[in-house]
Image (cartoon, rainbow, N blue to C red; front, side):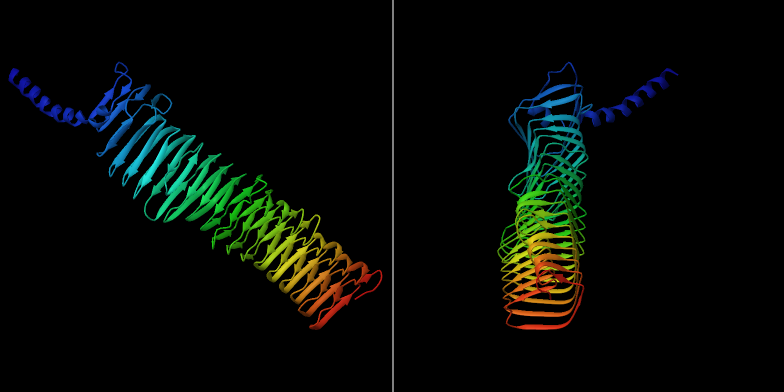
Amino acid sequence: MELNKILILLLFLFMIIPVCSANDNITTLSDNTSHIISPEQIEENPTLNLNDSVYELNFTYLKINDSHVICGKSQNTTIVNSKNSIFDIDNTTMVFKNLSLNNITFLINNGKMHFQNISLNNCNFRLSNDCEIVFNNVNIIYSNLFKNNVVELRFNYSNNLYANITNNELLFDKIRLFKGYIETSFKGNVKINNSNLINTSIVNKGNLILDNISFSNSIIENNAILNASNCIFTNKKHSNIAVIKNDNHHSKSNIINCTFINNTANFGGAIFLSNFAIVNIINSSFISNNVYKYGGVVYMENKAKLKVINSIFKNNSAIRYGGAIACENSEIEIINSTFLNDSSCNDSGGAVYLINSKLNANKVNINNCFSYFGGAICSLNSTTLLNNIQCYNNRANYDGGAIYHLYGLFSLVDSNFNNNSALNGGALFIDNSSSLSLNNLKFINNKALKFAGAIYSLLNPINNTNNLFYSNNNAFKQNQ
């Protein structure tokens, strides 16, 4: 019996020896241990466990070439402070769990970092080459997240954030930013999904993809390619800058299923484009945006191109030109869209204003819009091609209750004008066009306080008019 006990004891010892050996790579710093974490403690221990306490990193720079894990009890009770210590993770993996990390810089080169149940305060990340970062239940407080020549994101607060950096894609999901700054010049795609950005600025120099984002008082400066879908942009108060600014040479933005509400600027309450920039707007709504100068929703200049499809512009205003859109030396195409209650408060183009430009519009409704000249559209020295336009209840204080056109080619086909009013030209005021073509039009219940209840036409040398129908249009002095 005694021999059996000895054999059992020996067998037990042999069994536990491998277990202890397996745990030789795990070191726990107890409450009795100094609260200083040295480089040697990290280098010599692949897994370092910390208890509930406050710790201080005792190094300026530490290069990590092997996999390491630093694990605490809780992000609220295990705190790691530093005086700007630097971890340099080179072609390996480092994991942090259940900690609060303060004033630390992470350099990552071909490496991986995983953060789980972490609070980051004033931490910096600099990435190069092919990296991967995973955040799970991470709070970020005033941190410069990803700061280098490729991607710079500054987050004041974030929760449940996942970031995966490869040569092709950088993805952020479920982000909350307050007073944040994002700058991208990534070679692949930068994606932000299902997030809330407040008082945040984005500078895009790469390919930025946004989906299901709520923006409040935030701006995007697009210098490359922007694709935004299912986003809401509200309450932008920066008077000098539009919500989305496109003024880099040949930058491009696609705005799909987005809503812009109550944004304010000097030029372009929602969108500004210049210098050959291209903007496509599809299935989007613009409501109660306003500017102190030009383009309540969109201002465009210098050979920019705008295409609008299936979109709504409602209750937008400009103090000067273009209650919804103001266009200088550029091109606009509008298809199957509606302008309602847009206004130029003190000048021209209640819905659309263009000068030295080209407008091609098809299947467009413009109703209840107002300006001094051209209650719906004001076109100066421009090529204006309109097909299937419905203009109802628009008003101009002076000329062109619906449309004012001066110089340039003007063509209007298959359109209706009802209940529009002005001082002269209750529906249309057309002066000195290079070519005038009016075909298959109906004018009903339009009125002018002075001349031409329906059409005021002056000095138009090439005049092609066919199938015009008039009913109950009135002018105080002379009618047409």
